[in-house]
Amino acid sequence: MAREIKNITIFGAGLMGNGLAQVFASDENANVIVKDIKLSENPSQVLEDNLNTLISKNAMTREKADSILRRVKYTTDMEEALKDADFIIECIFENMELKQNLFKDIEPLCKPDAIFATNTSVMSITEIASKVKDKSRIVGTHFWNPPYLIPLVEVVKGNETSEKVFEDTYNYLRRIGKKAVKCMKDVPGFIANRLQHAIWREALSIVEKGIADAETVDEALRYGPGLRWPILGILENADMIGLDLSLNIQEYIVPHLEDSHSASSLLKKHVADGNLGFKTGKGYQTWTEEEIKASKKRLNEYLIDVTKDLK
Ligand SMILES: NC(=O)c1ccc[n+]([C@@H]2O[C@H](COP(=O)([O-])OP(=O)(O)OC[C@H]3O[C@@H](n4cnc5c(N)ncnc54)[C@H](O)[C@@H]3O)[C@@H](O)[C@H]2O)c1
Image (cartoon, rainbow, N blue to C red):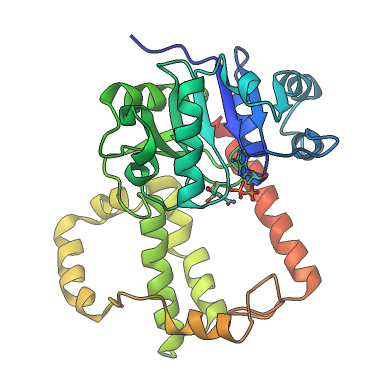
């Protein structure tokens, strides 16, 4: 029988923790507690700002925003955060030892069947679980930023995650409206980051080899294959093309693709030169303050628009 998940505790009131508070509190039955080691005077400010932005774009009603706010509490008190929790997700710093110790420390304070989820971006779920007594209770749930706009969550099975915890987590996330997908192996990058980094590796190689500059690479993706992916994905697209043709093309092209096993030398050079992208105004391209603002605004408005109907 599917487990009832009602009381959710989030560790870390940072960027992802606040975004997830909104995701979980969108469920009318939820009680959400956000626990941090320190909190600002008005800890719900970030959540309120996120909600107000959505309201201003007609992507949220005031009533719904108020009900979300009512369901979220912020605390620094460990006992209050844990005593009733059914589902505990950590969104603390991306540091292996911190995550391992957090789960080890909270285990004696939790209900015995509480699920422990980690929002790690890249680290091994199995290794994060290593200091906990009941390792079957830990599962990876990799949300994407901003989690209240990006539907995907990769539910990752660690080597010792129980089938029940894995399925309950997947079903719960689907129930609250996320596009949860199952990642059956605890591998670096899970599913979506492996895909993303494979494209990054090729993109940088194209620039480095002088085949095209950075702006052109992005244009080729945005106005070409990138347009199809939200509708078809890449494997349905191959089925549409026909696998016989797909094989002929792969046999011809694959020997020519980038296959290096280290980070790109172009990327390393930019970082060594202090060119960090938007942060410094120069990365693969140069960016003015106006262009940076416009790019962020364009992304946000696009995400609000395309995800409206997915919820
Ligand atoms: N930022 C992203 O785009 C993104 C996307 C997916 C996953 N993640 C992952 O989510 C996690 C959090 O990322 P973020 O960007 O929200 O970080 P952040 O720096 O914005 O927030 C981290 C918060 O955790 C708190 N914290 C640290 N130790 C704690 C503890 N022991 N108990 C309670 N709170 C503690 C900090 O005070 C801080 O408020 C990381 O593992 C990150 O890799 C981030």
